[in-house]
Length: 413
Image 1: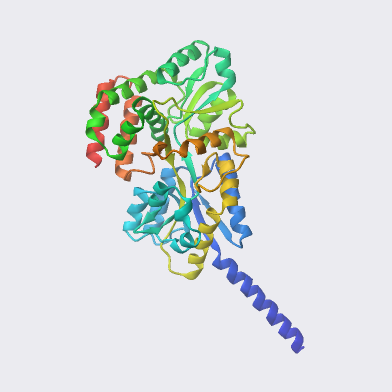
Image 2: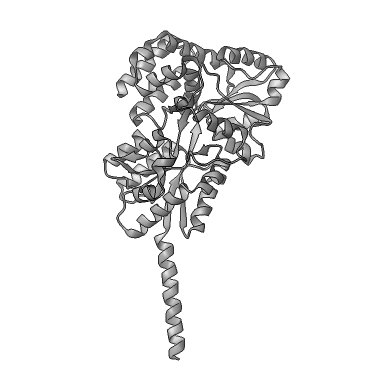
């Protein structure tokens, strides 16, 4: 009888121990990856977290801006998620300044993140010298996807300059093919605009405008040429564009009803989910540019300010899983991005990913996105508003568009 009681106590103790470990590794993770390709990529992280003994409580919120707002509201309400997707850089710093964000510096130090992350990204992932986010990948925003069959049907080549793109678009339109698939949301319009900004103005001009908010660069003839080029593109977007989601626009190019699609390489995740190998029926190239550049945006998970050991342990495990080389490969092959770790390569990456990695070997090509990486949220939002207003107001001249751009940014600084 005593032996049975002892055995029972042992079982209870073991079960309590297992329960304690599981509880210690439970993380509520808030994110905005809700499309098919995004969810398939995140599954790789979820599975790795579970394999390490963790329990993942999923909290998806559709739309990046909605998810970021949800995080802030929950923080203010005193019930923050354990980990949450957020944009590294100025916007996350704003939360850190208010004492709402914790750090995973112990995991970063043990994992030697400083040695394997690009310096620009390492710096943006820190606040007050400590890592407050675990970056999971690098996306490039200035990609041009194209339906190879549509181009062949219209007998046009892949354009290397924006004048060539405009000429090709006229031919495609005459052939009954929508030249440019575009989702009519401000952030999507900004991605197209920024591809033109880099393409027409070059890296130095792009850096002056977004890196320095240089008014002289914004007032220049080069900037006026950017707005003229953007105005010329308006006629090549179909009437169904306003309000269209990005993944629906991606589907237009996959089906061949549209020829070109200017979007970040997360669009490759939709191709993979549909069984399309990037670089085949849907080709990829960097958007036409004066000189080669890569407009980087980084997906990252940040960590709420917590004190209890269970949550701290869960955060540390999450950080370690995200930066694990095997997870970096599995996740990024699904997501369409490339590993944020510079020491991770894999021969099975698609041709687009290999082009991205080759491009980023030159530090001069590394440019920060204006949307979620390099600027304070107020300025970033103002830029999106100005671009969207210009794009959707066809009566606005390039001169007026440039003036609105300058005025809007000045008001937000």
